[in-house]
Length: 294
Image 1 (cartoon, rainbow, N blue to C red):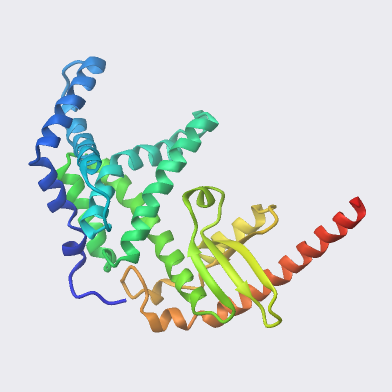
Image 2 (cartoon, rainbow, N blue to C red):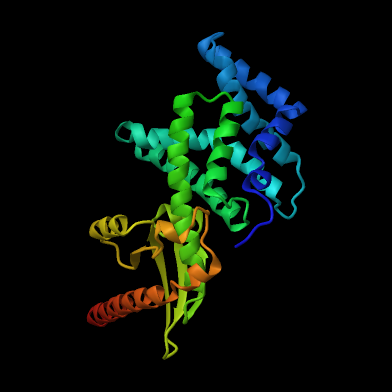
């Protein structure tokens, strides 16, 4: 996957944020948010800090509501990223630091926000808006400074965002390798709901005898994380796999080159054989249970 432009030119986070902050929608959103903060906290130094980051988000929401439905562009995805970023950061922080104090409903709501953000990142990677890891991280740092995030917030966001990118690039590389693997009719990114239930990739597979299988794979970036997830897993039809890619396979880029991805097909052939064997056992057990019930 090659691009002719640098990552900063493609993501345009700071440039897009600056454009939004010059808009009438931003002024409207900023007044609205300042009013809400003032009612709760009074006039404080935090007012300007919070107002700017959430005003950009709210202004983009207003702009998108006025926009006619059309083909999604790089600019649209960048705006969606900026719109959800402060909500993602709050949700991620709550899940990391206050999970034990939250209700199941609160946890579910935060996880949905995080998953939605992750899907946006994944689409940006798919569309080649992110190519170099360093430039991607620098772009995040730059726009957060512009939006008055503190140094500690930026450091936390960088660590969290790096973890997101790390997971996403392994998922995309795995999906690409699966789509080049013999017998796989289609491997595709799951919906937000399926992702919340633990499945990253939905696979449709046909074996040499024409028998069809459909299953979900949860992709992990390391062997140890895949091992731990499999130890916890007790759900039928749920499969966990290491992506098959090491850090060296990425060569500093967000995604590996196509030749590297294709070299992993043999790994996925073996992995699918294991999954298909497990699926056959599951089908056989289900049929025996059904016969006994009849």
